[in-house]
Each structure stands twice: as structure tokens, then as C-alpha cells.
Image (tube, rainbow, N blue to C red; front, side, top):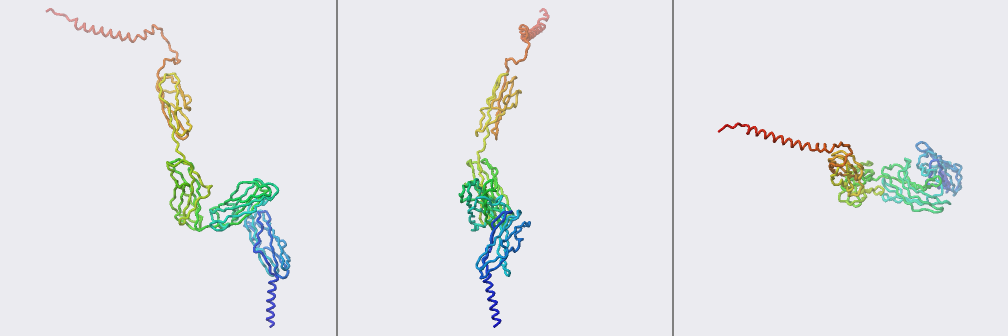
Length: 520
């Protein structure tokens, strides 16, 4: 019997102690997010559900949980930290302060708070988020991000889980809680890699002003998760509102952590360039496309197609294999037909993979317009008709009848390519001139250029003699002697003929009249 009473007494004490010292505690306490160099605060509320007063003390289980890799620390303190007396059925609020060193890396630091009553312990998780330097001087001023949200991702059916290459669509509301107008307000969304301490994507809305007490709602922005983001890192989306050029006066932000994941089968594609961006009909154009396997599985029989919005111009690569996390560049050449209508064409690239699935470069900022222009026609040079002129007269070379079917402005060049030498005036104008001093032939070429193409035409100038003085001094003889000089050739011919006739007569006489006749 004594043993039974002893056991019942022990059981009663156990039950009594359990009921007397029953505490109600939160599972996690998260302090306000602050930047390095600032102090984060929060509170721990302990409720005594027992029948008797309890006296407690609180402390960190392991302070090294709140240090970064360089041992830059967050100093956590509690007020009060010991001798905390909580009567039965009452609560006590413990203030928590975390002084963040200037050099602490951006991250959410997690550890445990220990609650000790002298015999038993309980733990509560503590999270101290250290924000990157979103605001230059921390949160300041009268602006407030009154509401923010991330649209549910259709691929994951969650607003905090995104695959590589997914769009993150956010919506932000901003209030001006001050007494003065705030001008040039900039609203941004930033995807930040907390592990690496860098922003990996950002988007910004147009600037606006807010009168005191007013708000701006429904500001929508879109971020794209980079295809090279590391799924093992920790990410957060920051929603920021600041006064442009005066962040030290007005800057506020909020944040939400998101998970970045990798699909088993997934690809990304980026139409990087079109060369040339302006192409003539009948020419070729090259499309440079970057493809990356962002899935966790290797892919085979992958191919890329590029086409314009009308599907009139298109080209496709041969199929290829691409291992997980690898990328490759592909060049697709498309021949632009001669009969295509001149104008602008917008192209899109598609990547086909894993049993017919495909993705495209849907971001309109990456779409490029290609202009197809009518080929330039060569100008027609016209140097004018051949001319016959007298020496010492001004000759005009007129190329003004040259033409260009495209209406382009022409340049002119005259040059002599044969004949008697002379000097041209205005050789680079449509009309050039020269004065020949000698008779003979003069050959010239006119070349016209429209800036791209050129053509030539020749003109022949024939120069005859002239009675006009040449400017040289010539000796003039007396008229009598001059006449005699001019008559000398004729006299010489006459004398020669007379002498010839006399010689013939003499020979005939010698033959026939000098014979002696004998009498019959």
C-alpha cells in the first residue's frame, strides 16, 4: 500500500508540474528586415498557461549561427534576459534587438532562442533577415509600400516558386504618408541572389509624383529569372519605392523570398542578333540564336526555327543534342526573295525539344525588325554629243543630262583619256570647259556616282585649224618678193618642161636631119 501511495504521489507531482509550468510560445520569431549597419528589432511573447508563477531566462543557443563566412556578426540581445517572472495565466513580452555589423553579408540568419525555467528548456526559432543595400541609407522618409504581390506562376501553381527563364509578375501600391509632395518617385522590382549578394534581374516603372496623403496603386512590373541562375542559392524579390536622386530622404522597400527551381526538361532561347538588319531583296540574312538546356535532363533531337510574323520568311536548323546546363549558338540563314514586298518584318525564334514541346523568345524587347529595301540602280552617265570646233575657242563639256533612277544626288568627274593634251576647268562639276590651242583630237570621260554605284560615258572633241592669230610674232615679206617667192614653184615646173621639150627636139634632129643623102 505504501508503495502504491508513493507512486500516486509522484504521478500527482508530475501532473501538477506539467500544469503549473505550461508555456505558450511561437514557433518562429522573425525580426524586421534591415540592411548591414542597422539594428533589427522584434519581440518574443511568452504566455504562462500554468497555475503558478514561473521565472525564466532567455538566451541564444549558438551565437555563431548569426555570423557570415567572414565571421562578421549580428549581436543579438534580449530585454529582459533573465529573472523573467510571469504569473499564472499571464504573458510577458521580451524585446529582441539585433545589431548588424557593417560588413555582414546579405542573407537570412537563423538560430534558436532557449527559454529556461531552471529545470526545463524550450526553444523558439529566430530569423534575422539582413537585406542587401536596397536603399543607400536604409529605409527613410514618408513613402510606404502599402501593398505588394507576386502573381501565381502557372508552371508551379505558386507565387514563390519559379523555374529558370520564368517571368515573375509583380504588383505594387505606394502611399505618401507625409505632409509634402514627393516628386520623381521610382518604383522598382529586384530579383536578388542573397547567397551571392547580387541582383540578377530588375524592372522599373515610369516616374510619377505623389501629393501628400495620396497613393499610386496597381503598378505592374515583370522580372525574368535568368537561365544561368543557380537553383541552390537563396533568392528574394524586393519591392522598392524611392525619390529619384534623393534616396537619403525617401526610400522604402519590402521583400518576399522565392525559390528558383529547375525542370527535368526545359530549354531557353534568345534571338541575339540579325545580320544585316537592313537587307536587299534577293540577299541573305543571318540569325544568331543562343540555346541553353536549363533542364536537369540531357536532350536529343533539338532544333530551332526562325520565322517572321507572316510565316513567309522562315528557316530551320538541323537537329542536335544538348546536355543539361549546356548552351550553344546556332546561325540560321534565310534567303530573302526578289519578289518580296519592301517593308519591315518582325522575327521570332522557336526551340523545339522533348517530344514536341517548344519555347520562343516572347520578350518583345528581343524582337528585331528587318527592312527589305529595293536594290539601288546604277546612274546613267551622259557626256553629250561629240563636237567639232576651231582652235582657240572655248569648248563646253556638259554632263547635266546624266540621271539616276533612284533620284539619288550625283557627283561628277571629268578626265582626259586621250588625244592632244589640255587643261580642264571645273573637272568635278556637271559642266567643265577647256580651250584647245592645237588642232587634233581630244577624248574625255565623264564618271557619275550616286553614292553606291557609278557609270561612265566618253565624248570626242575634234579641233580644226584657225585663221585667228595665235599670239606669235611672224615676219612678213615685201609683197613683190613675196609674190615671186610664191610663184617660184610654178616657174620651176615651166622651165623644166621647156628644157625637156628642147632636149627631145635636139635628139630628133640629130637622128633624122644629120644623115647625108646619096644621089640616086
